[in-house]
Length: 429
Image 1 (cartoon, rainbow, N blue to C red):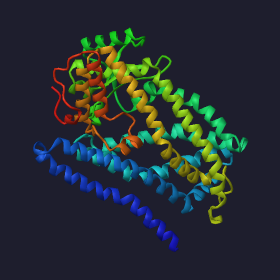
Image 2 (cartoon, helix red, strand yellow):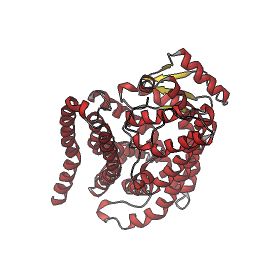
Image 3 (cartoon, rainbow, N blue to C red):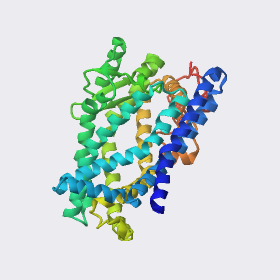
Image 4 (cartoon, rainbow, N blue to C red):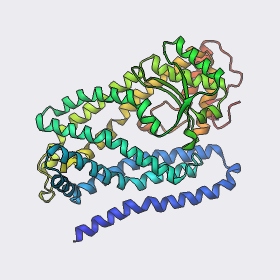
């Protein structure tokens, strides 16, 4: 009884604390609207970036706490029993278990998501999305995660049963076609579930972007704009897809905020990813990290499972009741491997920046686009070195600007509006 009350208290704390914090954030947001014109923009950038950095680490701890609660409260074992009593077939029972367990995990994570993904964005005026719309997209994202996650987890446990020692190797091999499949279908199946993609309305800009694409071997037939303004005020663009599903996409917020010259610089960077086959590079990097994570889980999990309390009734590594433990282990390993993945990402982002400069020969527009991105996205141009090392998938904006300025000097390209990187808070002309 005492243990049950303790677990109930923990669940109540997990579910309620971010809601209380969110109320405070909404109140601060309302108060700051009236005083926004007198706020120091640079201080706001630093404050937002610091908040996001802290939340990135808190999110990991939150997920670990939720998984530990599902495991040690006996909920996982209970869900296994419910699934097995509902279906006699082992595969169907596993699928039901994973669906319910992922639902319980999502419910425990919802309050944190509300605070980190909704309240904070509204506090800093980066979103005006209604709560109902945000909750609907969270629900839709959960359904997509179920469609992808449940079969994947069933495959993992099937491989565990067939090859207890080498399942990680087979799963690593299977993750390659799975990753490619997701990259192929995402632009035409998943992305349109959340946003509306329409052909770019600015015909002149579309022709310029397509001309640039065709010059670099990207056989795109159209350029799309997406209605991201319903969710955020941040700016972005991308080239995505593989094997006939490639798309050149600009957020409508970017089209609203940037002049054509800067948009071309942004798109030259994004096309650089495609020209240099960074999509494949990213897929292979992800497969490598997945395979290494699976290998470490396969070696560490049996030791941990053998030390679980007998009252939990986890029969072995391939018992789905122990899934929260394996997931917890995977989260820890993924967190520790995060800097390696981010280092690889920063490398290809640097290559894309250089491609942009070589294609446009316009470092001034490139620098201006960096400054505008920092302003709109509240991105800290000079984050602490440790934060950049651990969390940043892109080089800091200060480094990207310094590289563009160095390129201009080396190629004797004048910068009529050159500013030091530290002056990012000053709006670009």
